[in-house]
Image (cartoon, rainbow, N blue to C red; front, side, top):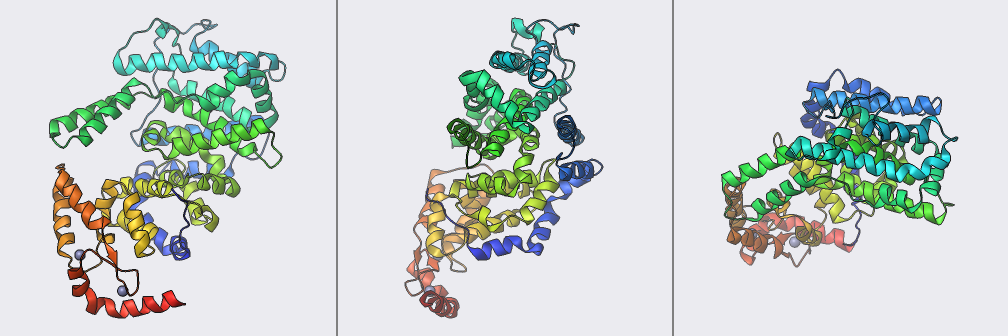
Length: 485
Ligand SMILES: [Zn+2]
Ligand SMILES: [Zn+2]
């Protein structure tokens, strides 16, 4: 896909205060109603950025933000991370158990650094062990799958596991020489764990996704199939292995992006590029956003705090994450500040894919209350001229095409085919998908031709163009003049 720039008038519209207040009026209440007591605290802590004080103080500040994020999520009926591991709590903890591994990692990286620097060679083993025990636990928790290592799942609260790793991740992030030391001593194995290994989302989430796709693709699917897909998803959502690890893995990925500069060594450039790819992928992929949620958002804060980093992140395709976090996350206020001041530069080099991610975020959240708003936002983003209309039509997802019926295809008011399709859309929402109907939409939206005189306004047929001519004439003359300038 060729990169494209957002036209200046659209950026101007985005920066218009009334646009935001209009949009805000419909979305903000979701969080403020429920989490109104916690939200200002999170916002205040987040604005402080944990930039002052000793390393330990800055780590503590950031951990406090995470703690409040979980509190907020819990208040809103989200994940509380209260689960205790079924293994016996011993003091000292069982060797190779979760508490043992966490303590070792914390000692090597944080408490006893630099004395234990040579022990950093053990990090890949310990971290893999932690990931494995999370998997063992959630396979049991979600699917009642038994594994002998369940006895090594000996934590009192899942939150402790996540926050301990977050603390260690932050320690590496805020002390670049320490991160460098870990990478040098930990070697390729550590790099693979931190920057190459796929996220372990678990079999249940994977299965739920396959079921969902199958049902969506099946034109014969019935309500019972949809229900089953929904149930599979609900069960899978209890698998938080990746969610808990996202604090740590996110911290580290952000660290590599933060510390890359013009004079970086080759390996640092490689780390930064892998890290950026991960962050963009994790934070904009529809399914991973759901899986990682607040913990990744927490880790993302430094990107949102720094304009140069944010521009880099936007150019790499990450704008959707910023919108998603603005609409619904503990980082909401921070993201709102950032979005209002988003420099024009950040909108450059966008690909259709990254813009679709932006609109998808808006669509998902706005659908219930204000369908028109999401559609108009899509329109703001996509509408520039007729030729790009067609171009974007082909780049949009099927459901986005249906959502944007009003803005694509034929421009004639009262186009009979558009009216017919709007009628069909109603039926389609209720779950009936027919190949002929989809083909009809494609034929209408994908084959429009521009008015030969101005080259902009599009019609599906000669009939529609004739019917619209009286209305289009003055506009057409204006457009022709503009085109000549
Ligand atoms: Zn028409
Ligand atoms: Zn015209």
